[in-house]
Each structure stands twice: as structure tokens, then as C-alpha cells.
Length: 207
Image 1 (cartoon, one colour):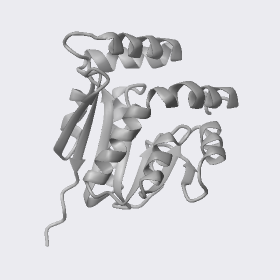
Image 2: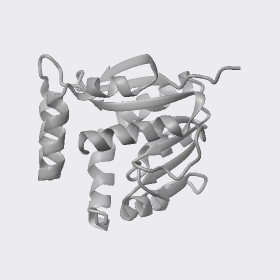
Image 3: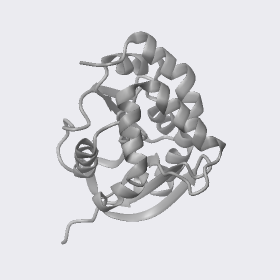
Image 4: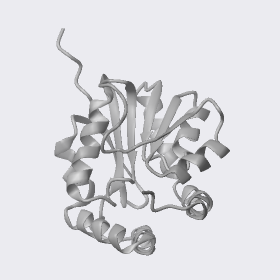
């Protein structure tokens, strides 16, 4: 059952989406640089990343477990963007479906075992030679104001969410995910180093 209501989806659209605009734009720019022509945004929430991709001419598909988030995304997105209700733990797509897949600030709220499954699923549905883009928290050595804001936002989301966030941070943040990814070609830091974006390439099959 979804933990989100319609009011939560509206609040996310009004408050969280604007805060993450810089991240969405950077991910879209990376997709362009990597030659990604179509992408799946996993745990897409209200579809802000899909709309950014669409504006850049990249065919986008979003999937989220919360019906309220998908309903909100459909209301405010162009009809060309496809949205589905589904779990990131078991994506309803065949192997190698998408030239690019995106996991953006959606892993830290889950237990480690679920994080690992989500990454594995993203890699599975990415086409050989395609890009898996992961954006997650990376605790800076010297915390800056952006990092304190991140902590404040994560704290108010909910007790279980914040507990998983703290465990993720103590494990090094995005560093713990690197062994789960294929070859990492790009690494970009934003928000004062509090968020890192990794671009990994799925190996092409041998001829």
C-alpha cells in the first residue's frame, strides 16, 4: 500500500521538485552527453525528471509504486510521457529495454537489501552499451549548509525513512553502491558535494 496521499503528492510537486531542479537538469545533460535517446526514471514521483528529459527530446518513461504520485505526474506532464505504477524491486520490463535508466535520490530510503535489488533491476533493464545513472547522497568531509538542509528535509519525511538515510550515510553514502554498478565513466558532485551522480555503462555483449 502506498504511504502517500494526494496531498503528499501535491506537496512534493510544490516543494521538493523545485529544490531538485538543478539535479534534474544535470541528469538530463548527462543523458545527452552519453547519447541516451530514451530513459526510464525509476521511482519517478511526480515526473519532474521525465519532463526535463522530454523537453530535451529524450523519450521518457516513469515508474513509481505510489498511485498518487503517478496520477500527479500524468496530470502535469505532456501526454507523450508514459507513466506506470510498479515496484523498483521488480521492474515490469524485459532485459535490455532502455538505452538509459535513472535512480535519483530514491535508494537511501530503503534497507540495503532493497537498494541492491533496485540497482540490479536498473542494470538488468538497461540495454548493453547503455547508461545507468545513479544520483545519491555523498556525505562531504566538511559539511556545508546544503548538507544540513538535506538532513533537515530527510528528518521530517518520516522516522523509518530517516533511519534508513542515516544508515546509508554511515555506510559512506553512494560509495556503498559503486561495487553494484558496471564500469563507472563519469562522476559529478552537486549541492556542495552532498549529492554525487554516477554514470555507469552496461557492457556490450561479445560478438
